[in-house]
Image (cartoon, rainbow, N blue to C red; front, side, top):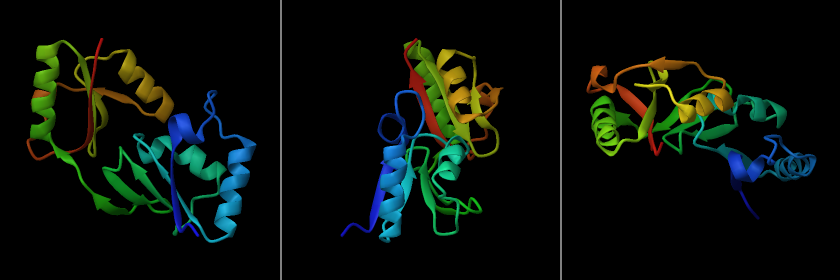
Length: 157
């Protein structure tokens, strides 16, 4: 018997139109009724998964998510961080410098500022849209070296 099933959202749980099918909802509900813990796992932040968690009735104190590609493990009900494995502002500066050298876009998620990028682009706009987030234009060179960074992306133009 399975005790826990972790489901990725994009390309797994979600249909091509970005919704959760009735079949997936029924399977998740049936598994939970049998005592199986269901955990959403995604590169998205918790804010970008909230609608799906609500739709699946996974908002209680025994519901958890893996967000930012498992950089954070959180309790859904109160956003308590169970485990955190993050980068630093210095790491983000180094990645942004390399991205600049390679001529690729870069954006990151910081605990203090949310979604940041030195220059807005299609990829950052897409990330903001699917997660319902604002974008902060921020030169990564201004980040504090010890700033907590959950995720950094470097994306080809």
